[in-house]
Length: 259
Image (cartoon, rainbow, N blue to C red):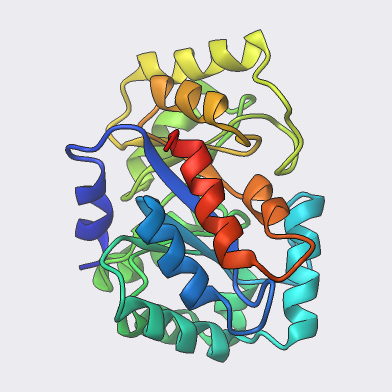
């Protein structure tokens, strides 16, 4: 399915919710069951984060979850095993979220083959330079029918935004602020103006807003200006403390969706 599964989710749906979860957190094998709970609760697609030792785009919360996951023993092979198990239970898009060094160490084409085999539909790789991707890997990603989504920030020039939109084949990931993930408590006026500015560009790809979305109000504002919203740090925080993580996941999604 690949790109088509990602593209289909945006065709007739409104107020799209994506949840980021860290593979191996809170427990080594918790991702498949946790993901199924999120889907059954109403999540439209999932970002499946693969922990990395130097996560440049991640804030403290996701860095913390990644450090716990690595202590728990998560590896790429275990990640792919869990994705395989998950794909047997859900039909929604599954997006790999990780770093390019992980692909290089594994072998880029071998990695893409593994993604297709296990059921990954698309990729978000924050540290992969767009020009490098275009020159060296665009055709390869196309060969394996995996969507690629590039990140846009408040400081990205309009010409650059349009370039990244042309390169993207799934959606454009609109970073709500110029900081790392998980920092914002509210959307200041300048952020809303930024969302509106991007909306008026009428990009060819759907736009999904991430970073700093933590409650229903911000979720609804994000969907007013874009095609969907991604929640990561707030969800990770909701899983903390005791072991009732599946119930917490269900309650979190219900609260965001106003159920």
